[in-house]
Length: 155
Image (cartoon, rainbow, N blue to C red; front, side):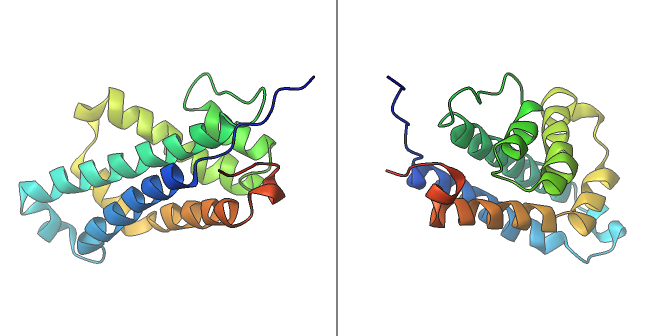
């Protein structure tokens, strides 16, 4: 007899999405400013680093939570999360193998090589790539609205 499916916990997923949204709101203060202004206050880099890292952790937590509800889909590393979300059609292929894989790699870099990440790089991510975080949240909102479409159950 097959194991019963474990339902996704919508509250856990919504909480993680709210972490991303809060961080995006905080990062928004730096969007569109000149690099010189960003650089002029050391707190800007610390705030931006924290908010970006928090967002990426929440994204990986969301992916891991969803995958833990799919038999045989447990990731062995953060880099597996985008691939498995794509394989199980939770996230579209182009986004999963592109932006989401890049996010997983950057999350690992922020955790393990945090001292090597230059201020300019964080600034550039804020200016050019924050929309990817919004896009991820939109995909997860769809999962929350209609889990059965993704062969998932909800509590």
